[in-house]
Length: 92
Image 1 (tube, rainbow, N blue to C red):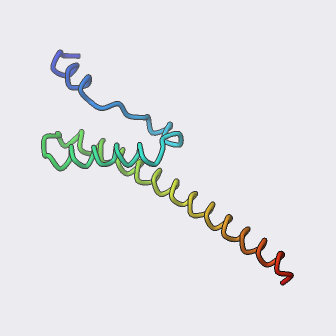
Image 2: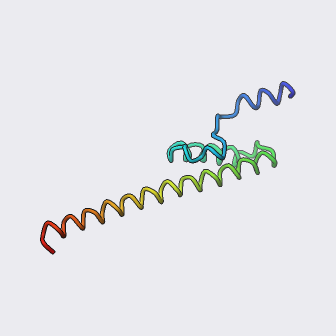
Image 3: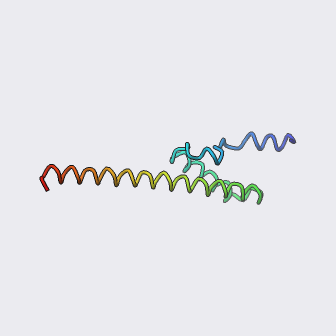
């Protein structure tokens, strides 16, 4: 690898591999996604790298949606349990 490529690789922010996205937090995924958007919008990224970053961004968006869907389901379970408990306590 050339020294220029080595320096560019060293300056890239650390990322989690696609197969490890299940362990990344919502906040970390969102921060990385914002960084990807900024790099692509800057126009300083070659087309091939832009495509790679776009794919990574799409995976991060899916991760964020999965986390939000899980949170929504948990809220619905809590709300349902509260309704059941309230109904049972009132004798309904």
